[in-house]
Image (cartoon, rainbow, N blue to C red):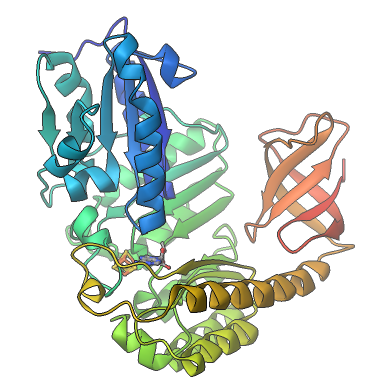
Length: 440
Ligand code: 5AD
Ligand code: SF4
């Protein structure tokens, strides 16, 4: 029976990473294809979907409070409320017990059939969280994209690394790669439709492999870089252990692969990295950044840091600070460690006191703020190519975009430059953004 959701209006709230954002675009596209329409708010919708993130305790708490706010909406009309994403996959039927307002729970391996599941849904609760190694292809035509210039393209999902703190191998499952044919077809289609930037997505893109085509991630990058029309190629997330010199060289050889890389360090202490099961030492990480900078002197590196992992001493933390100074990251995402269910670290005592974690996070962020401010100042007076993503909140004539290094650039322009590449003269900066004027 074909899915039929005609007359239904849906609203999706997305938490978490780019993978979740892309999944929500897929789900929206598939529901529209089945006849449903988008609604501007939960109040005006018949189906409310909450796409969830389980990576940190804080992300899960945010979702709990959002679901709590939805619960009164159940009373005034017959609405369906569903939970998708990592919390759905992780908590499964437990969620029904805790939150009676939820009607369905669907994990990432079932999005391709969500429209038909909802069309057939009658009484009772619906739970679909089984998982397999098969890749379910959802193409460009079934994706309702937020942007008409920059597109996410999933290339793999899940993770086999089992870092001690990380819930992802349990919420997203083991690594599975998308066949290369589907990826190339999607990028070609995007190029044909005027897209200029693609962001390849996966929990560990560097371990991409298509056994049938005999290609690894570097091979895939080379193929994509030959597709005409795509000017900027990015990928996220890379694992330092799997970032080969071949990948670094492929980036350096192809100017349409952005000089930008997100390379999570997590800790600058080799002892902590071993406890975290990261599979590299401080020196190996620093060597890779030296190699990258040697090949691409203008590369913008960013990273993730966890402070207060069990057993982290003041000396370990100092090593993290020192690594930040040595690398000079363009941006960092930093978090206080929180134990997550089923992970190896959740079985050891969370022994760094909360006030110490808080203090370390502040010290780390203050140091990084200074590093970024100094780095950002070096761009003043230069002209940067910027992909304008929209108007800025500041009002008429003000726009916002990203540079090749993925920095936020706010600028003024007398011409409407939304969804265009534009050269911007950088006239000032703060620690978190650059600003300037369009060079028309
Ligand atoms: N506690 C704190 N931060 C975490 N991250 C993942 N798991 C945890 C955890 N249990 C951070 C890591 C990862 C980013 C997406 O979230 O830095 O790279
Ligand atoms: Fe989590 Fe580690 Fe896999 Fe990244 S590499 S998703 S931190 S288990």
